[in-house]
Amino acid sequence: MTTTLAGPGAARRAEGAPPPSRPVLTGLDLLAGGSLLAVALVAWASLGLAHLGLHSLPAVLAVVVPVLLVVALVVARVGRPRVRLDPAGLAIALGCAALAFLLTYPGFSYGVSDKDPGGYVSHAISIAHTGDYGFTDPVLATAGQDPTFPVQLTSPGARFSGVWVRDAPTGRIVPQFYHLWPALLATAYDAGGLFGLLAAVPLMGTLAMFALVAVLRRAGTAMAGSAAGLIAAGTGGLLLATNMLQVWQTRFPTTEVLAQALYVGALLGIVVALQTGWRPAAGLAGLLVGVGWLNRADGVLLVLLSVGVGAALVATRRWDSRATWYAAGLAIVTPHALLQAYDLARNYSIANGIPSLRLLVAVTVACFALAGVLRVVGRRPLAAAARGLERRRPQVVVGAGVLVVAIALLALGYLRPMLFGKAYFDYNDRTMIRSYDEEIMTRLTWFISAPGFALMVVGLAVVAL
Image (cartoon, rainbow, N blue to C red; front, side):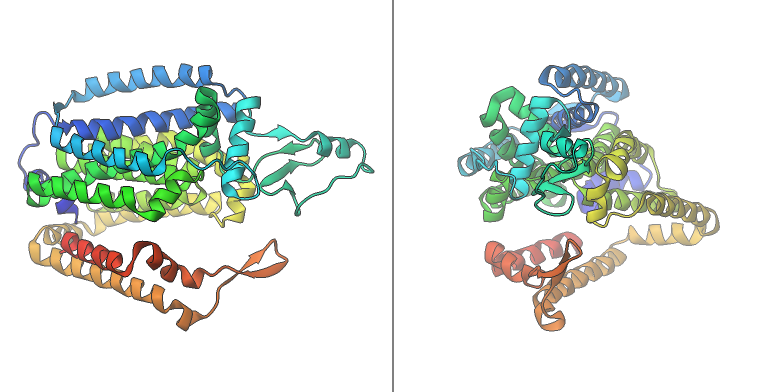
């Protein structure tokens, strides 16, 4: 799979050939990657200012514009790549974007905080009005001064659904979720009012589609030539733009669509770095993964995956400057992500079962300590294993193993109701409620279809084998 994504150029470098003097990027790479970099920086700046109680559109621009200039200077200093316009790839991406536009604009006008999307929208407008990620509930504050003053809570610790009480005596409210998405929506609201807020949601889906088309364009070209790359890009873009789940989620103001854009953008950065050796692309990937952690509590899983891959690179002596750039991009965002996860939104992290900070640090240190030991003690076996995986037969064996595991997990999903029965979850430590998690594959099949899943398996087989 790595060979497929990296392309023949990476294989030549693995064999000792010098890398090209100037990496080649396409217009599609720049359109997708540059747009997602700008969005990630705007979102991060919006969040940082909201956490400081200083959010406003001029303040966001005052932070982002100089940072973009610094990024441009760093890229120019590292080595400007050659740019190939790739009009065919751009045309496919723009065509898919036009189709996605027709299906998703405008987003749903959901502003009632009874469920997640309304909670994000309400929080965003609150940030836009107050400049702060939290606010003071005057009724709750009055009750803090006068215990006889009546206050109705919808559930323990929540003034309303998703409106969590941070400090009852002062009336301090910090809404339930992580704050990156509402902070970004607040900036969109400042820029264009309610229309700007609603338009920002499908914009994220469009950017995710651009990034996916760019990834498929590169991967398909690496596998079977430029024509195959165009076919893969067009097919993937059309399937994503017209998929019912994608259309719905791209109109729904929740964090999933931003997470999709950030992580597909990170994948694009990794593919570009593997194929061209261009280090800033790896830095972009690390940055997007870090911002993804600011977006969702489960973003820590991608961070832990990065730790595991980094440790493997250290152990096998394959850590290079691209890995350093990736780590730097991730490290820039990590302090803010830790602050939010373990302080500013600590209650939400606990509710989602996020590992403690002590455990997270221990796992990271243990992984790299083990990698350091293996680097010294297991140098020859690891080097032999790494060389073996560069040959075709071991790659087929590993790919077949991945394919078998994927098919087994897919089958387990369908068999889950018969094997494990009905699923429940503990609601507010008071009662058990049906989650219907056991029916997830049945419901996904309704959206994606059985032929769709079969096509996924075929696609995985093509890549893995």
